[in-house]
Image 1 (tube, rainbow, N blue to C red):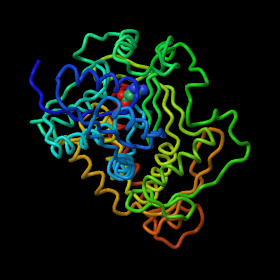
Image 2 (cartoon, rainbow, N blue to C red):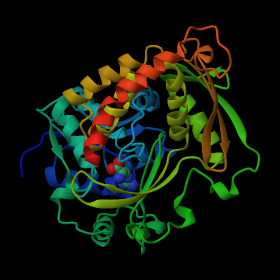
Image 3 (cartoon, rainbow, N blue to C red):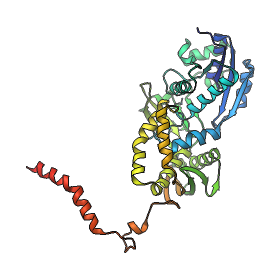
Image 4 (tube, protein in one colour):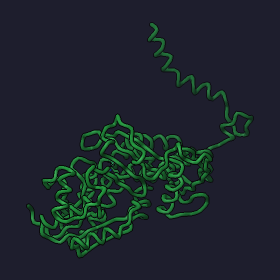
Amino acid sequence: MIKIEKIVLSYSGGLDTSIILKWLQETYRCEVVTFTADLGQGEELEPARAKAEMAGVKDIRIVDLREEFVSDFVFPMLRANALYEGQYLLGSSIARPLIAKHLVDMAREVGADAVAHGATGKGNDQLRFELAVNALDPSIKVIAPWRQWNIRSRMQLLEYAEKHRIPVPSDKRGEAPFSIDANLLHTSTEGKGLENPAEIAPDHVYQRTVDPVDAPDAPEIITIGFERGDPVSVNGKAMTPAALLTELNGLGGRHGVGRLDLVENRFIGMKSRGIYETPGGTILLTSHRGIESITLDRAAAHLKDEIMPRYAELIYNGFWFAPEREMLQALIDHSQAFVNGEVTLRLYKGSASVISRASSCSLYSADLVTFEESAIAFDHHDAEGFIRLNGLRLRSWAARNRR
Ligand code: ARG
């Protein structure tokens, strides 16, 4: 066992990280500082303080990171219209580098030589935490108890808790719980019955969206304002990034928007099935594409779409703090200079659909596209030559095939 002087632990106050806290204190016999971040997971954070105090922690840090999370991580990602494997809005993936950054900052501040996290050896999150720490400060060691200790199952974890008098909530006894990760962008649920992808997810896994079947019969119309590719207002009211996403989560959740039942490919190698709820994020993705549709040049938009899967995969795999992600981000951010305007959407029984869009920077020309008589000079004969030349190689190809 290597000698560690002081550890900063990413601490949720939940059962797993409470056990990890005890295990770190016992194993390394050094001071452990707890770091608890408010990412809008919708949970009281004061109980985490009480639990850390009970475990003898002297330095307890609880920090509200909601605005930084949305403005510096979620919004830059949304500018790219990022989706992993065509569907996943990356709600857990994008939160990890932010937590890692704060763990590193705090380690420097309190003079710790190591940080610790509660991610398991089978998941993506360990990569996201640790690759970020590598990129931000290679001198800081990372401790991942789930890969080091002898605890191999949920049952053994509960035994350890009882032995060390760590209170186990009654609903955590007996049946194993779902693994849930929540923040302002999404709620992700994995494990238990969901591990069989052939089985339909039970209703009670959904936490922040109603079943579209039970959503209001009347549609709701909302308008989102954009400036330089970022959403800045809802229904004409300017809002901070975190307030705006919170507002859209409420609206989307009520209309059953943003549910996803997905089997995805983890970076570590296995397939996994999860349920995601991303109400506000789904509305933002749809509306951002709506405003881009009138403000981006065709080639610029298509280039963005080509690099998007690559960019999304970088975030999924844990390379937020990597040179290639920053290079792609510079390209994406550059493209957003004129992405200003307003998009109106209809929320209705699980769907969020764009119904109108307007911008002072629009490239759209009704005069140019109209079926009616138009003032703009467009010579229809030009199209004839355009088609003849584009068809030139096709005519050669077809003639050869017929020989
Ligand atoms: N599979 C998702 C990802 O890798 C979610 C991971 C965390 N979620 C959880 N329920 N433990 O981004």
